[in-house]
Image (cartoon, rainbow, N blue to C red; front, side, top):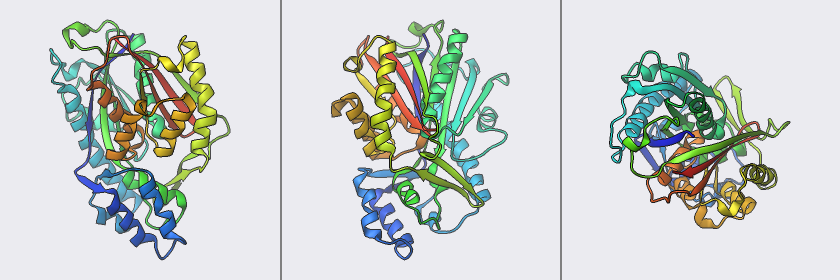
Length: 360
């Protein structure tokens, strides 16, 4: 079965404390939003301490056209992807270096900007990948995109067991901030979203893993994509002349608890497991309430969601990329052979993506 070999991550240079963003939001919205002091509690209640943005905080206090923001997206996204890929290939524990031209395909995941040619074409022009590298851009899956892209890479490696492929995610959520949007969704997004990139190296069954690493690697055993029909208004973007406007339903935590629980339990049952057998839970931390809903849905002790919460505190919600930051934590800590893990992400649609892992 396909295995995850390594993970590399990258964040932009501007690190901002949550208190700073809260004070900025108060300055920007105090004249236009009623009960601003009450609404600003979302900045503290979310338990986020720090986030990273591609521009200094004052840049967001001035209006910018969609074309200007998208130009920043392309330039910054490519640079972050290059750093994440280099970090992915520079794993210290790897016994044998993997060359860029060994990569058969790149799955490029994003939702927060537009680029044609797509971003992986720009990346291939700056790193020594083969000119025959297959390009699979995946756009529009939001927070579920990282896990979904990994699932599609798994399927590619099932078909081509000798292949090595990259899943690269990049999201610059800060560029979707709307200066004149006084909706509660915009304020929540302002308290939550951040920027980052990650790269995940995946190999098929015929890759000589013993020559690469001595430590156990997470094998992908099974995946499941699930769409809740007629739920298009739960989360997503609304597109206006000046860019992306975030859509959030207040019912998201309830949906996680009520809808996702049977979806996850069915997935485990199909794989002849129960929730108590999952040693590691690699959840996309959409927010504190979503993490708590995961815990309630699967009767998880808080120690099993601790890594997701730690990433949320340190980086905020980087949309599709965030789950890869959580995965990196698990790749860098001691894990026993035979341990089971589950990766879970939620996205627009409303949808979920699940992966069952076992360290081998």
